[in-house]
Image (cartoon, rainbow, N blue to C red; front, side, top):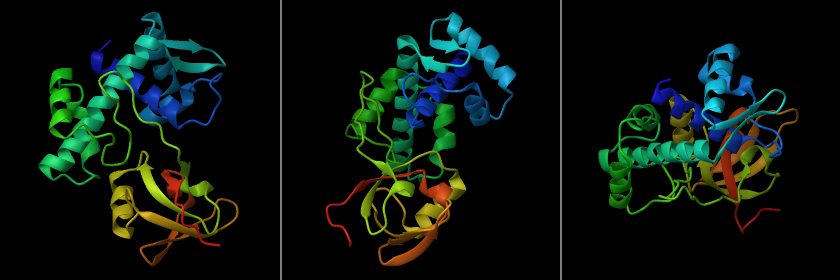
Length: 227
């Protein structure tokens, strides 16, 4: 089993668990992993059995998948490298935030922990990457966010964008074009029923935002609200 494949699976399991609203008693489903990787569930099941044999994950029918301590450690290390690389590419090499994921996916498997630590130090030990995702420190610890999805925010509420999760380069470019970026303030005017579009305001501009996209925008409430 290639090391890269092992690292990719553990990282994906961590990220899917992080995004899930399920209780801790339920693991990540095989179908969710297969969908993220665009491969068959049978292929995923074969790999998960190997990871379970290495005692990196807990894998049980009807329960799903969860990381064991060693698997969690590997996953966090890969996430740390990936997010440091993204921040380095933006700050030091003038990449845009929609370009960095592809580059970081390749480089994260090649750089050493020592190099990642040096890059992190040269950046001033940032807590977040360009998309607002927390960067684990050398011990795997990272800040926790008191945030909610833009899709769940009530009408008349204003929030500040903290993080944007798992969007394609095209979607990130669209977010940039409308000003929906990290630290932007967003006012919710109305939400259409049945998961319809949201009417939002950013810097005085009124925008209709697709509900699916709004789910990936994590915001914290602003003290100043609109009745």
